[in-house]
Amino acid sequence: MIESAFSILVRIYYEDTDAGGVVYYSNYLKFLERCRTEWLRALGHDQADLLRDPGIAFVVRSANLEYLKPARLDDLVRVDLKVEKISRSQIFFVQSIRCESAEETLEELVSARIQVICVNAARMKIVSIPPSLRAALVKIP
Amino acid sequence: MIESAFSILVRIYYEDTDAGGVVYYSNYLKFLERCRTEWLRALGHDQADLLRDPGIAFVVRSANLEYLKPARLDDLVRVDLKVEKISRSQIFFVQSIRCESAEETLEELVSARIQVICVNAARMKIVSIPPSLRAALVKIP
Amino acid sequence: MIESAFSILVRIYYEDTDAGGVVYYSNYLKFLERCRTEWLRALGHDQADLLRDPGIAFVVRSANLEYLKPARLDDLVRVDLKVEKISRSQIFFVQSIRCESAEETLEELVSARIQVICVNAARMKIVSIPPSLRAALVKIP
Amino acid sequence: MIESAFSILVRIYYEDTDAGGVVYYSNYLKFLERCRTEWLRALGHDQADLLRDPGIAFVVRSANLEYLKPARLDDLVRVDLKVEKISRSQIFFVQSIRCESAEETLEELVSARIQVICVNAARMKIVSIPPSLRAALVKIP
Image 1: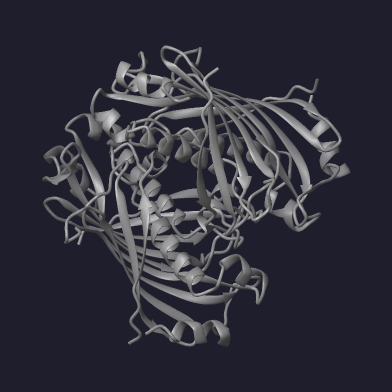
Image 2: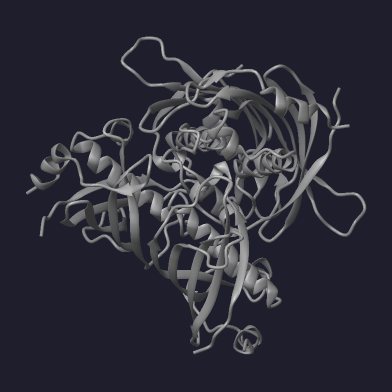
């Protein structure tokens, strides 16, 4: 198992909330993806560049989400990821969203397992993760 | 097991798509919820009414999603639900999103299992499904 | 001035609302576009088809919005459009969103003027509206 | 005229884009609001706090938007605001979104005028901006 830890902070705005007064449940998927995108960028790979050349995209194949506690307007949350496994054309992430505060232990709001596959963007067909990108991914201690 | 079938049609607009040319992965959760909302409405219960009196809301506790094939701009998709189980304060749904076409067998795009809990909207604490609503739900053949 | 009237009904879901208990202000732009899209479809033109061949898209060049009264969860609203003017590569729409009810006079929630331009989708450069599409647009009584 | 300048950076993610390959036109309104929210926060006022006590919210009364050039996936954009005028219960903003780059002159993508009114959140009725908040706003040089 390849272990890796990466996290970003996300501020909750009106756009993220719903009439129940909490973050709308599909919006956590956006936060989880922002984290995966920034992780790729930190490894030197922009999604827009990958889309142009070599014409690939990472698309979500499955998502398992546990909604434990809601985030609310103006909250600051920490979104993290661990890479659980990388196969020829797939990456398995374990992710969580926690309330960011001064406390040492942060309460978990959302727990997620996300399976991502590498596809040819034009035909949406599964392809191998390009060697150079793959090399960057497996180098992670 | 309580069986029930209900479906709605959803048209895909630009707002639903992303730069990959397909529906953005979190947006399917909106379509799944529209279906659950219309199912409740068909049973005589508006979510806005439930929020005002008795002050309850149904919130998603967990979601398991399999993304099988993407929907695209202008596609017409059918979103359905089956109630798998109703407990004192929870409803377990099996849902799918299929491409709507003239063909007899519709290709499945997204397969989902959604666990919903009934909460007091003001305090976000789990409560029993109100008896009158529960009676309407279990009457389903 | 070319006059034309077209309208669609839109139901308000949790996804459309925010923590203020009303529809989030940017989401009305989605409803306005759904109406323009269905109007084009009613004239025989899908946006996905136009994007593939002849490779054009209609993009919004300017939007003027007056927010008069908020829509709320479960409301049914009517979104309409009138074409004010069509030039070589632009269409000027006057649109409104009204509360749908049994009453004769419907209260206006949002009033909008939307200027749309026809572009080559690949290069995002302004182009003439294709003659066949233009002929369909100006035929409107 | 009260002049004030404030800006934030926004990264464009897949969630912000559409099948045309550019940012979906309603999403710029989210970015404009994030900037106004962070400006209020920089002045010491969280929207969530204002909503709880004294129970007010700032809602958009009108928006005029010029879409000059599209932003794309992975772009970094700068969103700014100037306060044009503050009346008893309204704030008039001039805002713009620009492409952030190493160049000295940044290309303008979106130009906007936003009129915001202060309302009692429970009844959505116009009220005066609270004196303490107003004092903070007019102190801006």
